[in-house]
Length: 131
Picture 1 (spheres, rainbow, N blue to C red):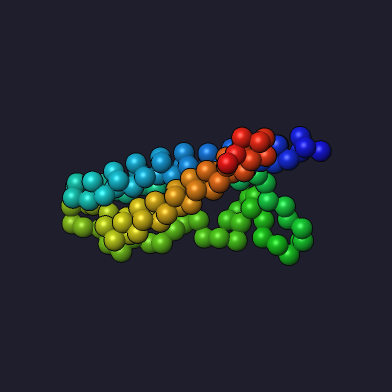
Picture 2: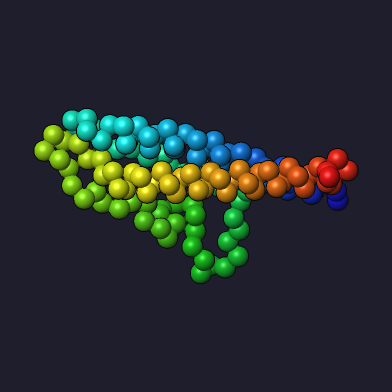
């Protein structure tokens, strides 16, 4: 029974690590978008979030009326918000959008890092090494 708890905690920790790696990679991509805001012909890019199944955490669909995460859009618009404009030199970077994404990405990373740190603290307490 105790082994099940370790598997659940390990799966959660793996999911948090995956999320932090994603946030780090996304920060690099978003900063490149901002850095190229004046580059002619530059098109901004973004990373697709990692799937739930890759991190060892899966969502259960308990009713046929619930949205499905497999196939199709899963109830969500995956196209994202349309760009406001493309400048005459072909650049499509909207600095306001990119800076909002950067701020949200930073907040998401801090949340995942905090949860990871708290999880490690709980594991230390569980094995008698905490406090």
